[in-house]
Length: 120
Length: 107
Image (tube, rainbow over all chains, first blue to last red; front, top):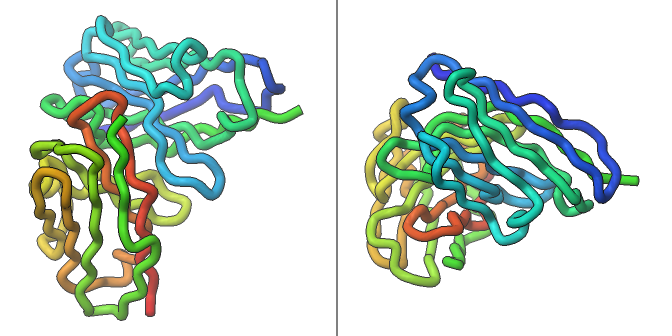
């Protein structure tokens, strides 16, 4: 059974940083691209970032480019998202998602999310 | 960036009736279009990808169609579990983008 468990969310002040983690199990992690998608209060789904299976290619939404960094450790079956220079508009539930092997950015399994709140 | 526009924003349907959800892309996607379902308090669930391919576990009451810029998700007979928010997503171009969602509610 595919399982994705996010952690690392919390309350942070504007301008602060957080590192989200996503522990994966139940599939061969190194074979699949992975993504982060967020859901802000009262809003719709918002794609944040995707990383290729080997980690050599990364993609970002314009709203987070230069502030967020996606990475993965295939030896630990773990996905990461480093969030820097956080803004109030980054407040959201952040989901880790496994992508289809043949459709990068299209996600067939999702975690339950970790909540990031940016507020002073 | 490809803008995805869903309509209607809210769809009121009686159980057992048919629901038709629309999604329009600002430019052609070929077949790189997915639909997700999100129930309150739950993670999104992939329903359809490549326009019309059902994801694992998606009931046959769900079907997807369309091409180019106009796409449709049809639920042939609504069950209680189907009342949720539905999102379309394009994965043809970077950045990936979602529609704003259609809420399917009980009439």
